[in-house]
Length: 121
Image (cartoon, rainbow, N blue to C red):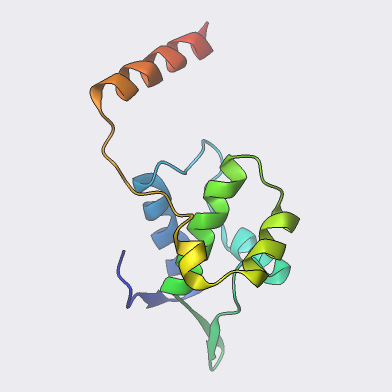
């Protein structure tokens, strides 16, 4: 992830989608939207983006918060608890919640293919 990244809400949505895929955090039918990003800002999960005129600018900090939130929600954490914890946590603590993007090894790939076949039955 580029620590110097910044962009509009629309580019934040597409950039975060890319990283959710890279980190195996994107669940089917759960793609981020502008509305979701705004909701996370309103809830305090994401820090408020910088304003530049009429535009808002998101940065690396919000991307890390978003990815950490998605990792926690995937594990079943409620959004209220995430917002409370993020408000008390340092950036490095939140960054530690973002999983590393490890390539899928053959055994995990085999397990996932069995899961997909079982779902189709």
